[in-house]
Image (tube, rainbow, N blue to C red; front, side):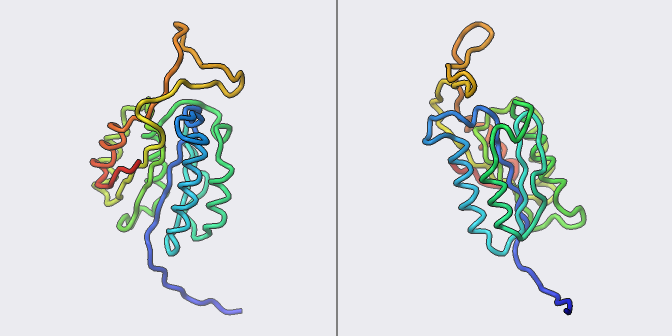
Length: 193
């Protein structure tokens, strides 16, 4: 056996995938989460020479897989991502972005990108500031919105009934395009739907 030096050309891409319960909404078929998983798998297929990492987030963010060239493993993690992957509900985009940024090697942040895939229902005010900091460090931040801006009533997966707030009003979940556009602009990236 001998060691062979291989020079890799490509970029490092961290994918932040929202697995909150709002991603189970069926305003796009079959639901937001399944569509996001399909999109992420196709994206990984197109990143042939790039290293890919995965962060799953809802009420907390978790590094599911560090940067790797093993795209088969990356797709396996994406295909098993579910609302049960993160025990705390909510949507902490800022924490997910911080975790993605920390996954890059501190010395070199050129040729680094983060792709945020979410419905944008964020309960976290820090996302814009974190995106700005990442852009200053040379990390490009792209956002992909999943869902419809008109929204849909949220169905509780455990009871199969319409979810209601404390006042008994049905909870409507909708794509927050404005926030995702703002994050992408500050992060010197692009927003896609």
